[in-house]
Image 1 (cartoon, helix red, strand yellow):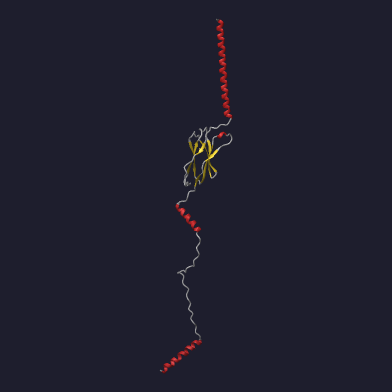
Image 2 (cartoon, rainbow, N blue to C red; image 1 turned 180 degrees about the vertical axis):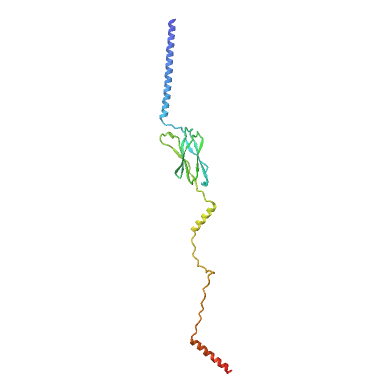
Length: 220
């Protein structure tokens, strides 16, 4: 009877040791797997799978810089929620006019890049995708918006009319010169009359003609 009790006790003791040994090995294996997975994430490439895109904005015509103009470039996250911020740039006629940071945009949510335009020209927005976009480690993927044209402020109506008159005067063809009219204030040139001068012979012939007439009167 005592031998049976001792045998049962020994069997239970060995079974308990075997069970404890199996539990300890399972826990260590699970811990090692988790540690390897964490190390793999830190060492390899990682992307939050966000996907930013510029959306179409209402077309605005006749934009001028008569007053400070607030431009809006709408953005939508068509992927998962961003894990951090990203950078953007605003270009004016191809040159960088402003640089900034876009905050976190959640999954399927929208945001916008705002910029105040004071100068005429072509404005474009550019934004960087999150690091590792498309599982690419080194390359930085950027996207651009559509161009927005801002025209120069036209002059006021009065100045515009003066400008048009100046342009018309410069483009007119000069007319042919007309003969100058006489100025009525200037005195007319006097016409000189030629008076014939009588010589001695002419005077004597006139006297001869007058003498017969005198003689006729005396005879009467």
